[in-house]
Length: 235
Image 1 (tube, rainbow, N blue to C red):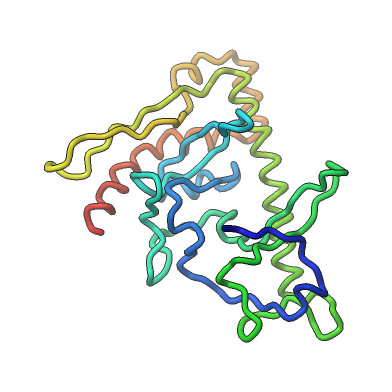
Image 2: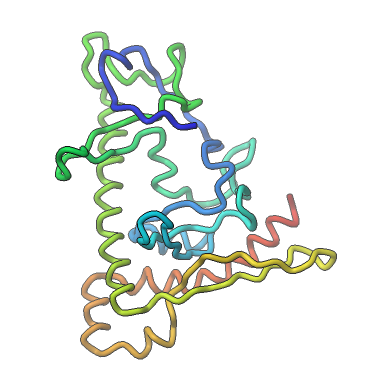
């Protein structure tokens, strides 16, 4: 269970951060969040889909990393088995949390339960005088930049939803000839027909937003489902 706490130079003075090339914290995640700026690159490794948050009803864009809930075919004991690791996976165990008293402010937090944290080995987060190390500053900057990209992604998805471009997609999977087919549900994709029928004005808006490469990459990424099936067969 994650213990997200605000990073504090006193409480976390002795903490050091080790590297986890396996990204074990997402080993049980069959979907991973993406930002729009990484869709083109991520689409070369994963099917790119959209899901609706059951609590907020908002859509998010994700990479499919497993064929069943609780399964990640890329997180292995020897390291990550894919050519691309999503940004929000790499920025862990840090996260920005909005200040409940001021929506314009965010607090840099850390998951105190992370196996990457230690007091004996790794990169120190604070120096002997309680100041942030250059290592921590660089990690914090990466978190901030990712959060900014999340905001751009939300705007991108809001536009897709406003133009009714997302349609529900059921994935019918069969890993081997001996297995019965089964369905993965709850996913959405960009509707190619609706995209082609957009008005010139709306299509130009997508181009101005720089969204077309991400849209087309997400549509082409459906071919990666078969890559996941082959990966599953080899496991």
